[in-house]
Picture (tube, helix red, strand yellow):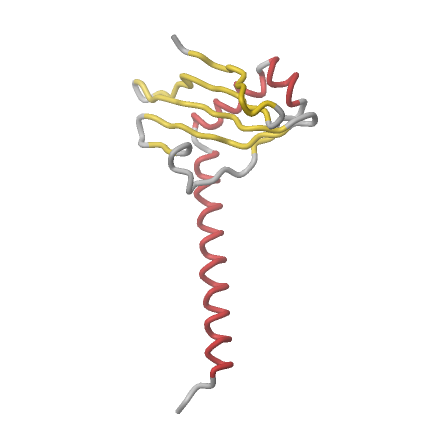
Length: 130
């Protein structure tokens, strides 16, 4: 029994679609998991309460989907975490960088900075721990 080339192309196409859909689904589940971690929620609360961030971005400040594949900016090893999250408001958009450390089973945001799209060479310091 031989299978025609057209049939093989159809099988490959549906297989590729299935693999891509599964990849996107799993990536979104991982991003949702990270968004539910305490350090992520705390970092976003700090940003949304910062007067300078509110002034430049405008309200409401929303976080966008970040890239899990960017392991230089987005990682957590259980004791430290570093993330670069795209954010936007009514006036402006940019990137929110934050660093967190876990001490005595409690996460703490040790550094946070906001980079605006209109000023990519400057960052507004949101948190700076001495």
